[in-house]
Amino acid sequence: MTKDSQGHKARIEYLRVENYRALRHVEFKNITPMTALLGPNGSGKSTVFDVFAFLSECFESGLRRAWDRRGRAKELKSRGGEGPLVIEIKYREPSYPLITYHLAVDERKGSPVVVEEWLQWRRGRHGKPFRFLDYREGQGRAASGEQPDEQDTRKEIPLKSPDLIAVNALGQFAEHPRVAALRDFITGWYVSYFSVDETRGQPEAGPQERLSRTGDNVANVIQYLAEQHPDRLERIFNVLRARVPRVERVLAEAMPDGRLLLQIKDAPFDNPVLAKFASDGTLKMLAYLVLLYDPDPPPFVGIEEPENFLHPRLLPELAEECRAASERSQLLVTTHSPFFVNALAAEEVRVLYRDEQGYTQAVRAADIPGVPEFMAAGASLGHLWMEGRFGVGDPLVRSGAPAKQGKAK
Image 1: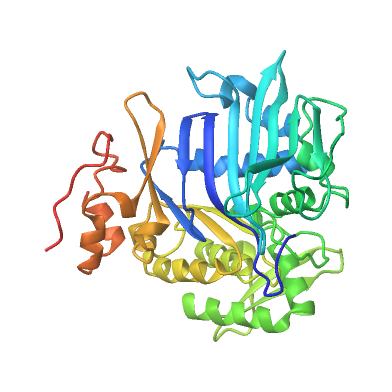
Image 2 (image 1 turned 90 degrees about the horizontal axis):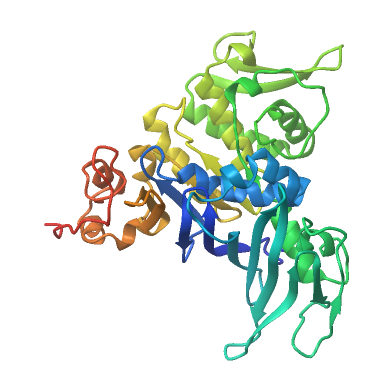
């Protein structure tokens, strides 16, 4: 995973999506280290979230599986849209120029095909964009080396199948370090599908470094932290005690049958409570803290609706925990909570809505007329949203272009 000596990792600065369900054509420019998506049900928040999950799954288990899991082209491509599904990201590795990754996928006879895939960057302020990887339907070429440029030879390297992703294939070879860096970057993403019920299970004992996407191994991660990073685990407990009254400690105990038992110790009681009897909110806060305080955090973290099961007064503090974590991981959060949004800056919030054609549109809260003025006058972003000051993202109002707002007084 690409990072510099200070531990800074690659960051996404731009996202463009075409023909992905309701995302007929959506752009996100100047993406911040922490980004929150707002909008009514059905506005496209979960679809944007799924774009990252789809790309991550393509690299982990292959395009075909990720494509089939989402219902193939019939369910995945935009209604009425023409051309391939396109995902394009611009990201910056430490000490390197901005890199653009473009992936276009279509379907032929029920099978996905990578119709276009390329990687390019611009060496120097006035340099021309140079594609050091360029593939179509399994055929293409790539330049090797740490800093490939136009003088380097781009070698023809055919793939076995047109549904293979070139970055995933070539990124396994040391001669393509920039391609490998992107592969490591994407395979390192954590896109959460957290389930409280999953945390109540009794997994097989054994330490695990990274929380799973459902959270079913939280006991294993606590076991790992207790053995390898006790100071980090104590920090998690300190924060948990501050957020959830009376919680004293969390224990992960190995049972004789090889299972791992997660227990919550409440003060002043002597005997801990089994996790399956603990509150949903306690378990969810525990899982989030384990994720956000990961000693070797993922470069990108996606969390859907963190407000579920949590007391509203905990949400501004959770937002601050997320912001602190965004110094080490890039965060994307979907939310319906004004309390969470109150802790955010207008530049960190994207408001999603459906246009008259039914496609998702997005606007930065900072670009909505009137919002910067209200914020400068001391207003909270979540309250402005609930008062309808955004002009979009209100489930009770038919969404269109952002309405003009008066200046704050």
